[in-house]
Image (cartoon, rainbow, N blue to C red; front, side, top):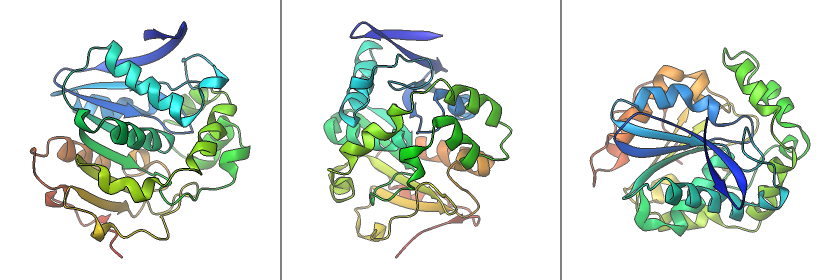
Length: 262
């Protein structure tokens, strides 16, 4: 296990591979661990990092650090402490997507690529996110996954307060309106059958600049990386390897990926 010390508290992270840096950020249900297949898939020419946010996995439980502001600051601290220089790709899921977007808005010159998965941009999410324990969320969102046992074990380590606290900040933000501020290549991904984070009702991706693209995995719920793992990993690698200056719209999308255009 790798760790840094922030404000005299332990922050857990893992790293795999060599090459350009990419950071994976977990969501409300689970920890860094569900990113293992993705980290392995890209480790041949990327140095893949994944961390546990405050209150999740093996990072310290510090309730005063559960705000969206503090969780984003934790990501900034990790980048600084690990000596990651240049622009970094960030892949965030759920809560991690909110933090990734905040990081990109605060550090535009440090962001190479941004992948937002199942991000509640429209401010809409299931009420169970405010009431369920992390383990209960895993049971609800991942009923048949082979990875469920390991994800459940990790979820049991999480502090329930860490789920709801960032949402109190999020309700005061207008992240969807600020998306055009992102200059990096950006890909927005949803699972069509996600019971936790529905597709934004008022969202017009065709209005965004060419550095943006969006798609929906038609046979996925909250975890496209589990539901359609092979397709997801192929998309992830294509996106990370996209040439600088190219548009994500140039990616060779396959028939089983449903493009969402209003």
